[in-house]
Length: 632
Image (cartoon, rainbow, N blue to C red; front, side, top):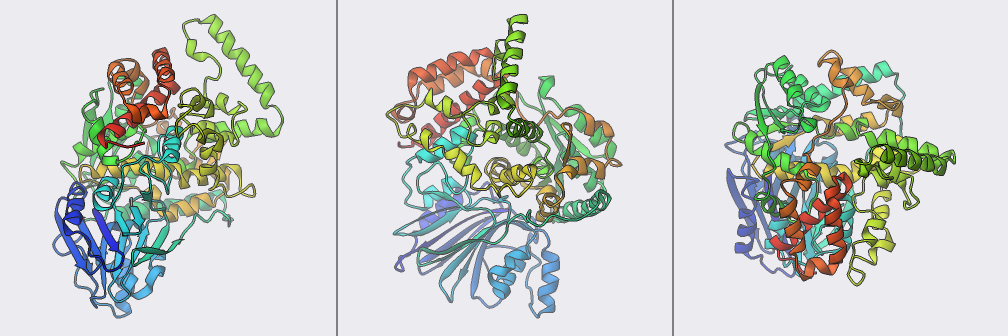
């Protein structure tokens, strides 16, 4: 696990060595063990190393045996040993035992087709000294990050936005379309970033660059949902067990200690259960709160005790004021999922004992674990049956009645839930109601009418950004929703914060659920294998492992991995959040109408989750503008 930077200048213009070195320095947290550089003519490569495999001899940039290729690489190819065996049979000799050399020699032999062989998470760049070209690639699902910038002066890339800003001639000007997407979803979808002209490399893609120009930029993989598998439920159970255990086994390969994040939920518990078949006395790490509604520590303890792990717990208090600017610096752009704070704390603790942790990330996306899937399927049925308006009227009556019977519960005014929101006539694609923080009506009520964001409301960017990944109505609705989430929400939100927050503390995070073989297999099964009825989500996953963890884990209500945001926004953080937003200057209030923002702040005292999330989004955006001195 590492950090990488690189430059390919035009017209044989040599890169600035000092800028490359400084960009690498800004990635020191991603690779504290060693750094290296390669300079030749108009090309420069930089690397920061976190030593995981072949600690002594896996240094980068690394050259292949012929000296033609140079690589900088961030990530892990988990099946590198089997690829090495194949290459050795074809006459390739190796000087190290690292997966880096296997990746490089595979490219030297197979070119871009090598990507089909790799099972892992990666972002890498290979310089071909003969062709004077750069080949870049990112893993299938977007676990490892890669950002780039190109203009008339050349092409620049880095693992993180702050390093790229240092390396390239980037103007810190915000991208209005990206900010509009951020306010909608709390993250920014690829290929955009919040910084104008800085791009996010698409997952599952490769790129060829020469003379500072992009010659090719193509997809090399997609989830194969168009060829359903014809398996019985029993056959699917048996095959999935084998796939999952193999995914766990591969991710435990390391020359350093490996632990696990243990939230107390189903996914991380099953990861630990599978790990326990391969090793003993595993180190596990959990995080909790004083607020019992959000606390899953008792469940984590139960799993830790069952499998005899070396378990450590951390209690998080709402003392986050001092770390929010630090977190914003790491992302380099506004990122509003408050769960990132938990990962920051938990990674800090885990990194003192291990360099690698396994996690349960991706389980909800692969197995339809989110409540929104069953909720939207119900809404879709109402739409198709012509009952949406009738049901919406009934919900209004129910909410009004509850409000009259219990006047203290003002937040029950319709619409109460995302399902209620999906019934409103404001959506081109009602599934957006389950994903959106600021919808079009919210934007109308707070955007500055003379500012750059206001015209974007009519363009409805969130709709086009999400539905560009819609595989079409020939695919079952549940599979379509999961596919969209795997292409947008998973890499843009979940994987982005997991990587950024763990690597802030030099900690590598691996998830067996993100093995592309697991994803391909599960998404090609009948939807009823994943979700059957309102409550039976993750059906296949639960039935496959009923013998490993207590059945009560599968039956209890899902809490999710999040902070008590509403309690904190209304309570101890209210004054600070309010001050940061209201004290913003011209850049922030070129986007928003100040009086309308003041009204939103006043409404936040109603203890409403939706309003709290809006306020948090604005608070993070305000911090980003201040920390990076952003221009409108």
